Image (cartoon, rainbow, N blue to C red; front, side, top):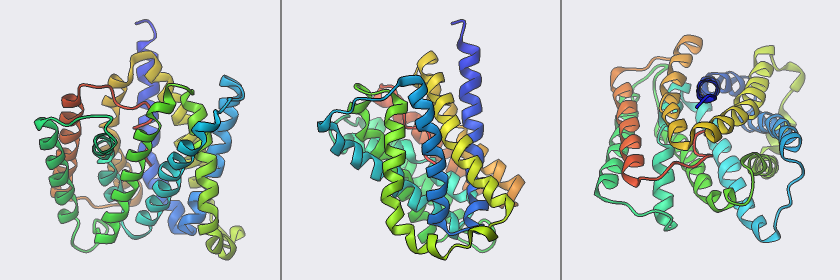
Length: 304
């Protein structure tokens, strides 16, 4: 257990960096086109992750039979997740998106059951119902006007982003037995970003890149390098030292830390009903994971 303090420090730093993603991405999305921001961010993050992977793991030998699954995982975990994430940020607050992305582990459990990787017991059905109730509270609490408002479209896009990452986490389970985590991350980031490019071409062509303010470039750098590449290395390093179950405990902090950062930096307003909804979601996630009796996926945490 000599390395446990350093592993916990790595996990905590990863969560803190993830928590800053919501506010930083909101800066970037508001100053650029949403898909342009997503493509720039993941091009940078994917390239940095690839370099780290090559240095640590070497060139991977991908089996041809795994290419189809890797492609589907890339579309779910990057193309759908990031496309809907930035679209949600363009029409609602970073706080709302952070709270709703807290449902990601619930979606992971749902897809694990659909694909027959897991079986739900009564406690988990209760947890899923609790997660739905938490989402309802978050949306109801933000149904008014102002900085804390959330529309049906904003909620739907945020939940789609969470569902995309949840399905990604389930799809890569068999791949995690054959490839290192950074190898999978590098492949899915690069391929998922390439899939986004055709959809983002009109925005990329219209964007005046020379007019983008400095804070937007900082947002791209932060969310790409620190929020993607560095956090991946920190998180997976911590997981290998203390285990996925212990690492998952830090994931519970991400939505609320994301809200705090958004409130401080962006002036977001979050009412008590929304916070209560976030707490209900976290409790549902905790109960659901406990009832499954299995360690969460190594790649289940970073969703933003």
